[in-house]
Amino acid sequence: MRHREFWLLVDEVLGSAHGRALVRELVLPRLDDRTPEQALDAGVEPRDVWHALCDELDIPDPQRWGDDRHRQAPPSRR
Image 1 (cartoon, rainbow, N blue to C red):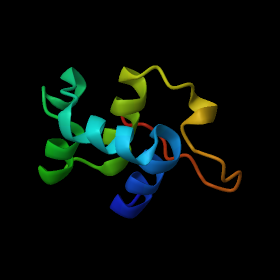
Image 2 (image 1 turned 90 degrees about the vertical axis):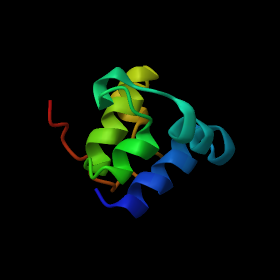
Image 3 (image 1 turned 135 degrees about the vertical axis):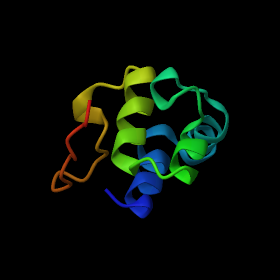
Image 4 (image 1 turned 180 degrees about the horizontal axis):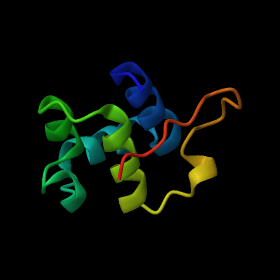
């Protein structure tokens, strides 16, 4: 997953205003108590940040990938 794909999913799945606020403000233990934005800036893979954010928000796997049925879901690295 590229950064561009991460931001497209944030907008599509979470809503642009709400999703971007969560990326800036929500501190996630799985990201070493950083926000998703801080984790991305620190070089954490966008897919790992996306999975951590979706897990924290209890977003079911089928809904994580938006409306594009051809979009490949990147595997989580746990």
